[in-house]
Length: 174
Image (cartoon, rainbow, N blue to C red; front, top):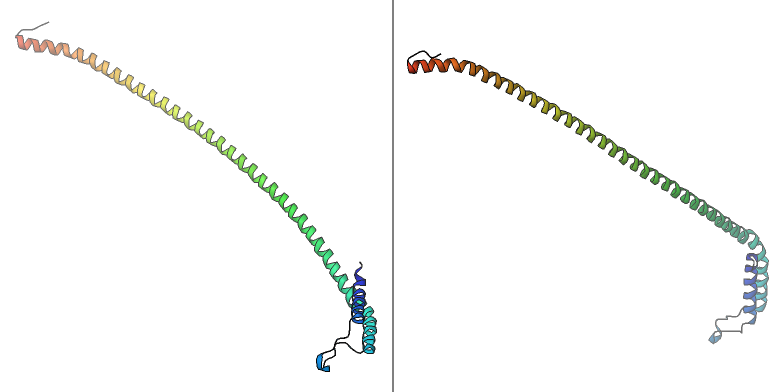
């Protein structure tokens, strides 16, 4: 049913109910619930005459404003949903980019760590080799000095031994 016919339908329904209702009166004749038929007809005519301008001036503009508000609300909701979907999509891309960067950073960190460990191991190995060379050189020097000292001692020990034997024996030993 069309919205513009609702007030007219309401008025017609009220008129039918008022005309078909039985007469009611209060006891003791004090209060009359059924109005004078002439006055009732005048009220129905006035109501019917006022129904058209009130409908044109009040109901139609009000319903038009409500329809426009509904359309705007619906349009705004749809735009908000599109913006929310777009924001979700952008957020997902951002989170993926952050995850990718974190993965790349972790790989770069591991590569740097491996390079640093390799360099440290190489330097340690070089230092050990150098230390071993120094130790070997020092051993060789000590061995050479020991051999030299032994040969000198041997060379000096023989005359000393002869002299000591000469003194003990009391004669010259050759």
